[in-house]
Length: 470
Image 1 (tube, rainbow, N blue to C red):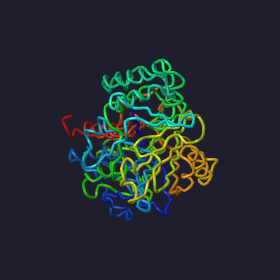
Image 2: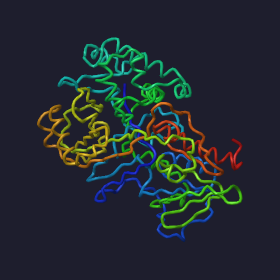
Image 3: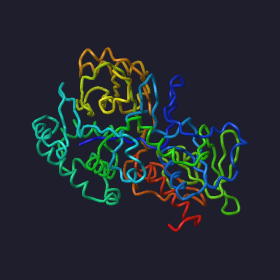
Image 4: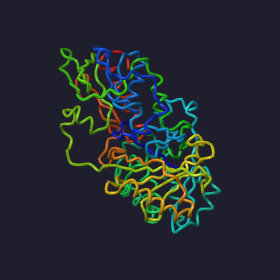
């Protein structure tokens, strides 16, 4: 079994200014002068995360003019990479699943130079590391791991059966099947508390930022299928290579960075097309329509009328903290994910990024990525760093005390809440005359969900305007 992460779409995270440069800044116009902005761009897209970029890609493929406005200094939303002293630091733990169906159709994998993880994990439990291996890809390793305490023999057989079941069903079936929480699903399937607490909980918490396993079982099944059919991987140039590839396909001048949209006017049909207002005060009309591709909390601010029937009760916040360290030697040499199955401490998972792709660090250096689940608002970065070092010293020995801390990322909104009930097939993108919404909150909270949602919004706009025989 293997793992992925999926934070997607757009992030409110702002990196420290001292080292905020990104190696991925596609050619784009920075909207500092209002006079340079067209007043009739055709369509307008708000937000250049994966969903917004997917929508833009499909509009461009249909030769439909548009402007894509992004508030930050680069594309990607939550899918960003920073460069620091020769290290590539993804903003939070992010792994790409090569079996994502929409990504396979949209992305050029060879140019991303994807580097795979080992198909399995090391689980830290009872002061030792125990291997969990994909029985179909590493059968010898899987047989050797049968006696370990990360689960019983029936548990490990059930993992293989769950893998086969998920891989055999169409995505549409998995995403619309009767649902429960993941926790209830694992219990119903017969998994023991031991394998749930020692493997599934840290494994899935790293994916869904949900240690309670309250996320929908539909999402679990879809991700499990992707884990079974493809690799977990990292692009050699950082996770930002994915949105950068999409941005590079856009028409020159169609992307406007540092251009924050603060209001969306839905208009009133053909008599008054929808428009957006930029932070500088410019109001820009979109005669073909507006696609809003930002996180759900931001959508609710821009289009409060789009959610009149939704309950306003607070939703769980999916947060994470990611710490990066540099060292000269990795105590584990494999490109493998390491899970905390001990039930103690604050570390959820970690890995040595340079074991997966050496380009994440300067020659001779090792990049360490450590992930925590939650916001930890009551603790300072310094306190968290000290606690992580102390905890990992128990895992790897005194050498951890020599690791150099590079940066801490606090991702308060890492993913939309997807507890049942859910609609992962995709909500209707059209929320008004000429106004559309997309993002991972409209489908599944995965890379693929964001890409699917962006395509659906673009297709809806194209159909509504009679611009294609779709």
